Structure formats: C-alpha cells, structure tokens
Amino acid sequence: MTVETSPEAELEPPPQSSLSTAAARNLATTTKSAPQMQEITSRWLLRMLPWVETKGGTYRVNHRLSYTVGDGRVEFVQDGAHVRVIPRELRELALLRGFEDDEVLTALAGRCTQRDFRAGEVLAERGAPAEQIHLIAHGRIRQTSVGKYGDDIAVAVLADGDRFGEHALLAAEATWDFTATAETAGTLLTLSRAEFGAVLSAAPGLQAHVREFSALPQQRQNRHGEAEIAMSAGHTGEPELPGTYVDYEPHPREYELSIAQTVLRVHTRVADLYNEPMNQTEEQLRLTIEALCERQEFELVNNREFGLLHNASFKQRIQTHSGPPTPDDLDELLCRRRGSKFFLAHPRTIAAMGREFNARGLYPDHVDLGGQQVPAWRGVPILPCGKIPITKENTSSILCMRTGEENQGVIGLRQTGLPEEYEPGLSVRFMGLDERSIISYLVTTYYSAAVLVPDALGVLENVQIARRRA
Figure (cartoon, rainbow, N blue to C red):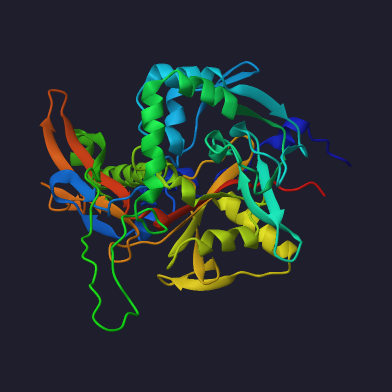
C-alpha cells in the first residue's frame, strides 16, 4: 500500500532539537579586525626622502650666481582649431627673459603664424637656412643629425611647450644643425626673423634688451651657466695668480612649509561606552592620519608650488624615443645625474616597463630595500607611486632622483617639536567639547620638498603605458 504525501509536507523543516547558531551568537564574543582602509598605499616617497628640520617654516636654497636664462616651456591658448601663444610666455625664450614691455610682447605674439603638421612631415632640414623659431603647441618632433661616420643619430625628442630655432632670430646666416621630423600630427607657431625684425625696429626698449642679452655670453661662466671661479693650473715659474671670489644669487628661492589639516570629531558616548576591545578614538585617529599622509604624498608629487613633477628643471625633462618606457629611456634618465637613489613611477607604468624588458629578453634585478625585495634597473630601485597622474591618452611620467643635503639632492622639509606632536611633523591638538557632547581634535602636518640643484631630479615624460596591439 502506497502512502501519498503532499508537496507542502515535504518542505516542512524538521523540528528543532538544539540551540540555533543565530541564538548562540548572542552569547558569543565576536572576533573583529581593526578598521580597514583601501586608500592606504606603500608611500615609498615619504619613506625614501631624507627629512630636513625646517625651523622658521622656510628653507632657503642658496646657489652660485648663474647667467642661465630662459629655459622654460611656452604655454598657449586654444580657441577651437586656432592656437595662439600667451604674450607673457614669450619671456621663457632666452632672448626675451626679463623683458617687461607687454605691448611689445603682444605684438610679437600677434606675428606668430600657426602651422599644422602631420606625422612624418619634415619641419626643418639639416644644412638649410634657419629663418624662424618654431614653438610647439602640441605634438612630438624628433631631431636627428649625421654622425661622424655618416650614419643617422638621434639628437632629441621635443613635445608640447618646447621650441627650436631660437638662434635664427638674430643670426642672419643661421642654418639648421639637425633635421626635425614630426612623429605625430600636431601644431606649432612660427615667428620669422623678418617679423621679429619689424617689431624690433619699432621698439627701442627691445633693442636695448637685445644688446644687453648679446653681451651675456662674454661673461665668464662654466658649462652650467654659473659665474666662473678664476684659477690657474699647470703653470711653472712665478706667474701672477688670478684673484677670484664665489658670487651668489641675489634672490635665492625659498620653500615655505605647506600644510594639511582636518578636524576629527568623536562623540563622548562612543569614546566612553564602546572602547573595548579597541580604542575608538585611537582607531579614528589612525585612519585620519593615514588619509592625511596619503594627501601629503600627493602634494609632494603634484603641488604646483613645490611638487616634484612641476619643479623638475626643464633641462632635466626628456621624452621617450618611441612611446613606451624602454631600457634605453631609463638609461638616458640615469645618465643625467650622479648617484641616482631611486625611480618613482605609477604601478601601471612599472607594468609597462616590465613588458618592454620582457620583449627584449631582459629581466630586471632586485635589490633589498628595508627588508623588501623591489625591482631595480642598473641597481637603482624602481618604486611604485599611485599619485603620479595618468592622462586620458594613457601616458604618465617616471621620476628619477638623487636625495640628501650632502649630495645636493631632493629633500623633504618638515618641522618637529610641534605643540602636542603625535609623530614627527604631525600634531594632534585637543580643541574642546561642544554643547552636543562632541570632542574635536585638530590634526595637522607641515611639509614641503626642495630640489637643491637642478640635476638632482629628472623626469621621463609622455610615457605610453597602454598595451600595444598585437
């Protein structure tokens, strides 16, 4: 005999015969983690920079007097397809550095002619007459020449804000020492010698400025543009020795400490009743300080006043030869300074470097850094920093630096001994209790960075990090 059961009877749970886990949890002690935070990174830059005590909140970098003029980049304004140079930006040219007549600068900017070029176009031919200066608004241009044995050699790669042909404005017999070929499509502005001469003839102030500029090369200086220290060597007998002194820059740069602050608020009820097993105030403070340190590193990289990306000398900024970060590019970045301490790059940039190494059958070394194995090139560690920006074109930058005061390198600036200091250079001040029973703490850190001499910091720019199509 078969007994039929309904579907509802099959779904009924068996009767409970023991205490449920949900009820048992009411008597259990929960095992908890400390509060986690995704924003925390390795912060290698903060760990690797030597920090210099900065009393008075200002650090002055004294240099020998230098005659170097006009080595900055020129900026432009874009109005649809039309591009024009900002008149005051023409002061970045060596010839016009320090010239203050805005009316004349506006006249020169108005005589610049826009030229759009395509990839592969030859913009200047080696040996041909040079009759104009080219200001690059956008695009990449490769300069090549002929080597001693007749083969083509690379001279430089120029990009946005660079220029070439400045010598052509004054020298009637100037010729191009290289061939300039466009690697990408782009736009440049040209100012011919004739147009410059037309403005020059009608501007007595500009004529006086040009005469003064033309006299500058006659002053004795070393290859870095610094005032020369006269001396004699290899002489015999009793010649009269030259007298000398070391001249200094009359207006050295000063770095003021920057600040990052926030107000941490904790309710007294939370601090009083919920401090076991973890101290609520301490955990709140720990995460706040982590966020503050992350912002500090971001500012050290990106701040326009003292950030490393914006304070690298333009002569220490180089372009990649083909786009991706190749070993050759890293070698060129290294060779521009002595005693390089480390590379700093975005993690995605480091991945792109690895692809280029693999494509050439190379495997980077690893070095021990504080007990951690990190990749290195030529013995120089390659450290990640997610604060280095990536553009919408999937390009980024690689920094390479020498560090320390004794090495005339890059240094971090801070002041210790602050009131209610929580850790070096960071203070936590009790601000009181308000009428809502909320305790407030002012969390503050003071910091900056200084590049003591220009060659202490170099930047490889416009590094292509996107994966190539197979």
